[in-house]
Image (cartoon, rainbow, N blue to C red):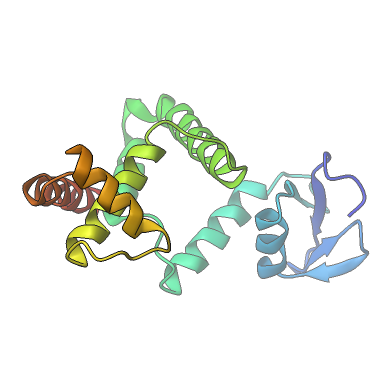
Length: 178
């Protein structure tokens, strides 16, 4: 694509067909979704009036994904969004959503970039403890048997009650997310 810093301009014709101005061909909503997934900003304008239709089409893309069973937005979040349109809180909601998605994107980028995020070590330790509990202390990764010996000799290894407690806490956190 020509310049990824500028939004990809898509023009909507009166026939409702969408035209990619960079490649001089028609595109579908699925194509536009692909551009966005690839990190490209998109701007969709009505050819005749010049109106910006980007929000309308982005919402349509989300609605199509949701209708195909690709549920990302829980029902309670959708209900809250609908409520925000009818309350005075609507002025705060866009900023909150933007900040939340920025934090999510930053966290994903750090994880993908191999950077250490706070809490990752704790999550890894909990995963290892869970695997030890599930396998009865049998090694589940190469080289773990030696680690088990050194932990039990040092007395620093977690006992089964601690592991069960951590597992219960994780299950509680997961049920809250649902």
